[in-house]
Length: 116
Image (cartoon, rainbow, N blue to C red):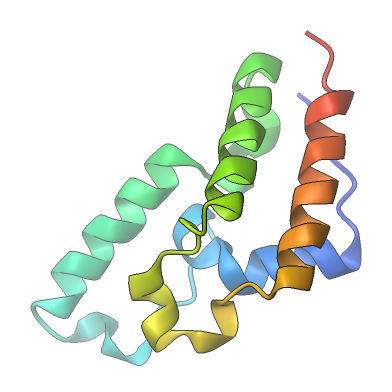
């Protein structure tokens, strides 16, 4: 079990931009009960959690943690996450350049701290 001390500013960024699709703490939007949006939303969240679930990250093997951190860093650098479709409705989830730098710096330190 490998958990990380997450600074408050990083927690806020992750909560605002990542946790709805990548944790067990999904804050469902007002439209989550409207069909067909709810089907699309539910599938999207299910797939997001399957790919990465921060709520279960501590239980991942060290190798998987390191791989996931590398992937997160690359997706942030390439503006692939958070998804554009998500930020259209959740504009506060967009990452500023400062947020990106803070996240990438912190994630890189965590990745580098994991011993095989």
